[in-house]
Length: 179
Image 1 (tube, helix red, strand yellow):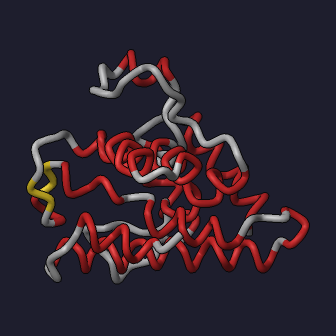
Image 2 (tube, helix red, strand yellow):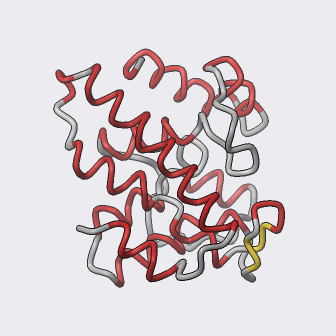
């Protein structure tokens, strides 16, 4: 798979949004590859990890998030499933699942219903495979609105607190697995 070709297809202009996407995605991909190198016992598919990390936010252009140059119409919480639809249409089901499952530390059906999130309920939004978990984990250290900053483990855990203790606990479990 040529992830650059896919990114160029959906982000044809060399603009600030594409720059943010590429910087953020490269940060996530590099962290994923570092984890794979440090943990050969996990037997992670490094080629897939890099591709999935580079494409995990492909759907952001369809969302309304002006602070990161996204001028679409959908709520930002939808970027994962929208990216999943894009990659499914390109024939990349496994990569589509990473898009759908990387928000927060994953979203449960109960969370979606309780918060009345505008997400289709016909799929899972929780990372299942190790590769899905690694991309989700690595993504938490980098913000698209502050691309020059890498969060520490403590900062990342604190940033997840507003979404509930369950997500923080899952993140800390990943810290034990991946650091």
